Length: 180
Image 1 (cartoon, rainbow, N blue to C red):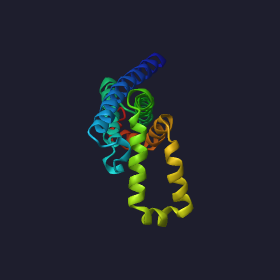
Image 2 (cartoon, rainbow, N blue to C red; image 1 turned 135 degrees about the horizontal axis):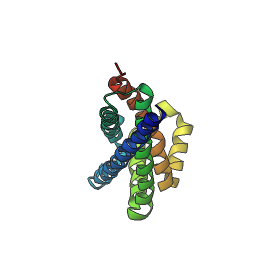
Image 3 (tube, one colour; image 1 turned 180 degrees about the horizontal axis):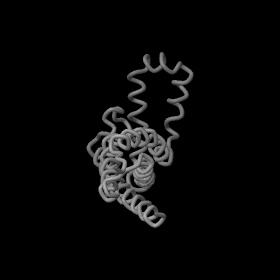
Image 4 (tube, rainbow, N blue to C red; image 1 turned 45 degrees about the horizontal axis):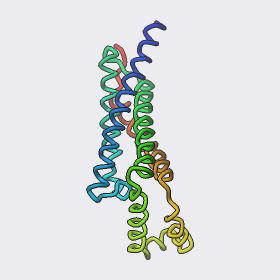
């Protein structure tokens, strides 16, 4: 029994790692493509955020492959574990890539983000002041130029965590299957 459990855990990590790695590659290509198509990936509305769709796709297929490989049995904790490894790996590798890309490959990534964000805030000044308050609005505008590639990478990683966790919960419940 312990041998079968260890084999299942090894399989779990291997499948989740593979999907996490490939998912991060797809995410990196998508981020670069969006940037070069003049759609800065940080300024896309949340509902169109690629992380939602890419995470869902790679989490779903990693959990599904594990269930198939595990004699069509998937416990909830296994789904959560696979999903967690998959989305954390995608987010971690993609955020490292963002840091490298923005710092050394395409330094305009950060400056474009700052410029576009300031333009957007200025266009919606009244609504933003009503939401944030004038002091906070002015502080945001003042601090934006000091944004670094590391800030954007860390922001990407942090904002990916709740997206991945919620998707993992939903997909794990949907795909779980207990032994008969």
